[in-house]
Length: 113
Image (cartoon, rainbow, N blue to C red; front, side):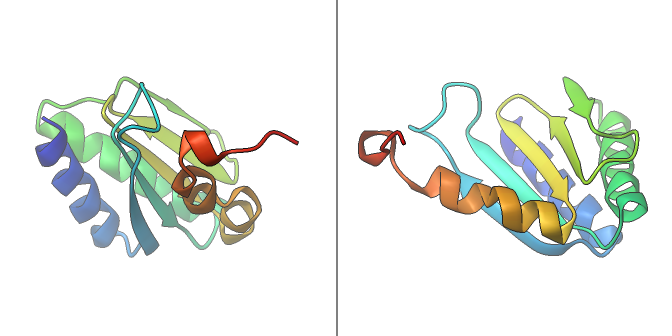
């Protein structure tokens, strides 16, 4: 299922002009997911619209998400499909949390501050 939901997410994001779409392979770094898809939107309304569009398209394909957080107007919306998790963020939130960098470090090389 993850390959088909993965393609569906990317297509739905493209439909609504998502910016800087990145896929992060977290196999071996996470026990709860294999892939994160991260996209940037231009406003809270835009990120909500993209997330809702992804959810609607996945439901049409009988692949409804396990859950979603942040749809009520935040700077970050997360949509959980189990093996694949979508993060749609405002540029400021994406830069601040820098998920790509956070997940690029292997667990053995992480240091705790």
